[in-house]
Image (cartoon, helix red, strand yellow):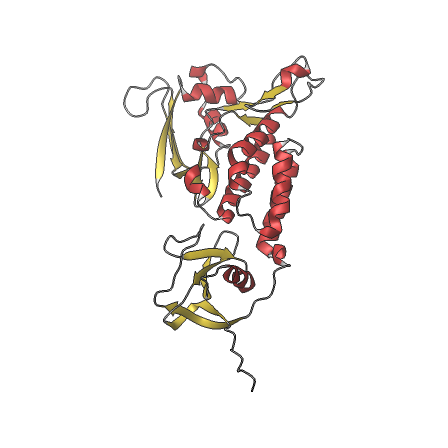
Length: 335
């Protein structure tokens, strides 16, 4: 397994982690346990660690440092992500909402992410993970009046009440939700969403863009979309298609065409719930004459379907099923 090493120096990163841990002891008096408490926030797998011995020499890990070995992921590239199928883009948004739900009720209280740029995240086996805690705020901000509880964004401002306890209740949560809307949902969710789910996607966009829903309601809305998508219930209104199937066969020969976005750059490979949905897609593509359900599946359990304009012949394949459009038989002229 690939790993990356991050050295947390007590004059740099550890100072920032110390602030996350709610005013721990002086910088040189931090405990290794504190660092690993902070690492609980990181969904990255901890591969190992070592810490400097108090009063130790200069060899190895120096005094006042902790070396943390974490699994290595793939940096989140928004441009590349925009070119992926909707199902994968939805997964990133869902993982993000689940993370924000955890941060809203973490062991350290409500935690706000101050830097919400995509560079703060990586993906490991397709799952979104937070890379570090360099820019977070633990605990709600103290306040005297409601004016102290204003969230300022480039084009919008939001204000939450100053509670009787003298803190801005819910400020971190609302900051996280709106930044998720700004940096992720706006770009990843609406484009090419399945027609049967667009009304639910629009609801999420409206409620998060106006901060009308809390993180519990937002997570519930995402989980509802996931449930409908995995079960295929959003496909109830699809029209039946005329096709015939060949089990345990796969096509051979040229005949692939490209579509976008696709799981393959060389052809048209899409995620489908069933042969019924694949047939609907095939009918909507003027080039499509047949499709193959492969044995491969996505993270939701959907099949990967390969769409083709033609093929030479069929060959045995125990993991595939081929479906071909039924051609209309020409009517003989009446005498």
